[in-house]
Length: 219
Ligand SMILES: N[C@@H](CCC(=O)N[C@@H](CS)C(=O)NCC(=O)O)C(=O)O
Image 1: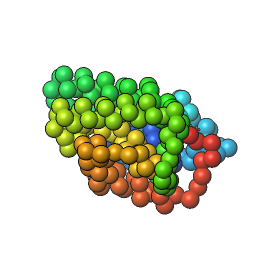
Image 2: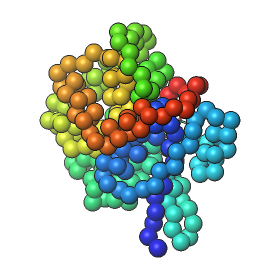
Image 3: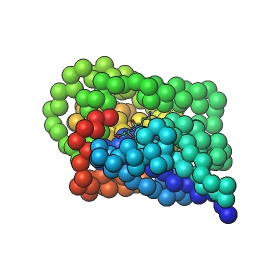
């Protein structure tokens, strides 16, 4: 029996952490089954704990004849997929570019809390003239990171070809669009390139169609 992969995710409208490994699986055409658990419901924790020990999504479940193996946390899932499918080059091939891609991915994973809170991920949101307030320095830093990568590696994605780093920043692209964050030059082009990806579009279309709410969800 061959291994099967199941990705446990939250509402597509809100769950920025779920989007990251989902986009990697889709973009690199890795077959998987999707299990969506509604966030912020009375039984959310119980439902997620049935798959993931943290009570958080995303979680990747790999099943084989010996039972299930679980990997949780977006970045750990990305690294697992990179090791499981080395032929797909989920990270850049060059080892220094790879280190750079890991640096900015980890920076995303562990930082930008002001931006994440103030510009919460909601693909149904479209606001004009939004006051980014205390998120400004996070936004400036992200624009700097993107410009630096696009100039260094020549685009169209952060390290040339689409890689895990782009997936880590995909929810930021959505936030920039939702909150009308002013972008220009390479950064604008990058946002357009990302939003033109059919895989990201598939997530956004599904998130826009969702009718259930997660009222306390902010990240
Ligand atoms: N560091 C984790 C963050 C995971 C996380 O915070 N997930 C949120 C959804 S985006 C969650 O599961 N929240 C639980 C809940 O809302 O009950 C990762 O990268 O996967």
